[in-house]
Amino acid sequence: MALADVRRALAARTLPSQAGPVRDVAPAELPPRGDSRPAAVLCLLFERVGQVHVVLTRRSSLLRYHAGEVSFPGGRLEPGESPLEAALREAEEEVGAVPGSVEVLGELSPLTTRGSRALVHCFVAVYPDPGSDAPALAARSVEVERVFTVPLADLVAPGAFHEELWPAPGSGRRAVPFFDLSALGEDVVWGATGRMLAELVDAVLAPRLPA
Image (cartoon, rainbow, N blue to C red; front, top):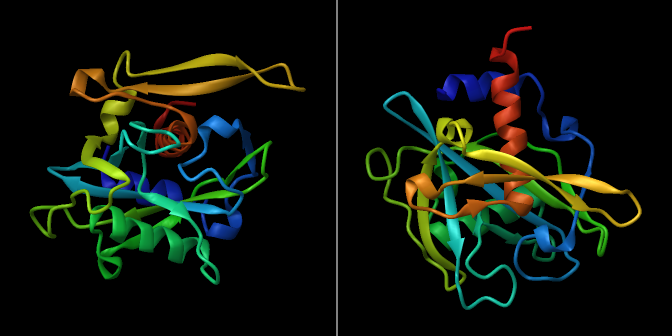
């Protein structure tokens, strides 16, 4: 799965104003900091030896919300910020991503929660290969325990992806995506991050699948 595939997929479906409809998630799937302010995250991608890698973080085990979970760099909007400004700021604060080196490709469908209705925006961006073309990314915040990367193709390897049907108040049951990264020495990715990854992978793979 090359960076050109991602560029083509997002160019075919995204300007931020053309992102998909708002999708409902459970409160447990939201990023940390359990308040009602909108949030924004940055899905950073880079290419290494022809393969796209995605940057993920493990949240600190000391956090009140979502301790130890895998997520994208991101957080809540500060007063006067746009979602993109917040995503870039948080990525710099959490993992050291230099905003001037970030090339934003598009935005995935925003998420909301039945509890607060606060939106979570996810921007997909390209970054130079850390450690090669750019300084290595590393945990720069007390909220982040570690930073790691995963080849995007590994998310669709046999046994890596599955969905579970969870009860959904007022609407029966809903599918919750899971990405099992245990083969890579990492944990399961689920929740809001899992939904965003599932949408990205689906967008990239769909044009390549036979009709």
